[in-house]
Image 1 (tube, helix red, strand yellow):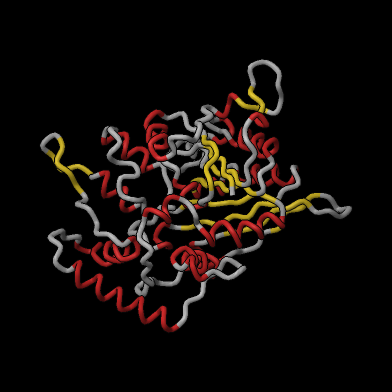
Image 2: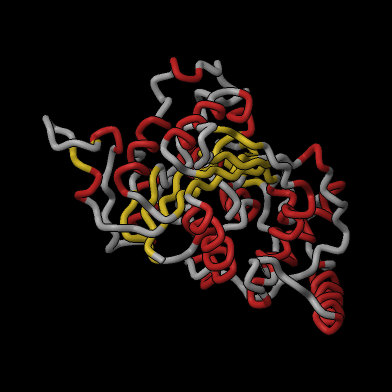
Length: 344
């Protein structure tokens, strides 16, 4: 599976999708440095606003790039984020039109995108209309980092674009095999999250949009994905080796018994830690068990004051140790990059 990446950041979405990264696009110097460290032979194509679907002027044609199966991207969230001014289309960082151009020209089998939840109420209807106009389907869902076991919420909107056959292919292949660097760099130990509460339907939303082939023209259908799909998705991420053709994971009694034993062993080894996480202790221990490594100290001393430790944030984002940190960047650069990323 050949992957092209837009707005790559530290490559969190690419780690989740897996496959072979063929090229990526990143203009931030710090993020580019991290990507270059992990993918030294993969070209950075730079600013996507320099690309287009024609050969006129100084525009670089998209078809100049190698063919890919999957296109990923987390285009700028500032136009839609509740933390900003929510200017939508009027924001100069509104880059969805360039993503649409890339999809139209590159024709990947599937496109996997992410953004803030605020995009659902601002600008996302335009994305769906554009997909319908281009004859493509779009399926979406909001997922919290906590739904995967992480000790923080970080709700993000994830959506995939393609035709019906491509969506089925992606569900049964990409997520079930996870052949990316994350799967190679982290422990294969997966601990069942026994203390989690069910995901409420109000926390998860989803849908589907497509062009009708009949005489009544375009239409959009809303189809709730709901908590079951999100729970199955989280389960499939932890038990990837037991995937069925549907991409959903199963777990038999023997697996469950072994999981409980590993959980007890982990809790006993963790009990001697000198770090006191207070009320957050259960959430921290759960994530430790899922990742297979202890939580770093959450703070570091800088300018005679305790500051947030980027290594701890890297751990909270579920990244391999040293994925963002340890590349000669400043603490501010590391924290900014981690704050803009996703939990693979």
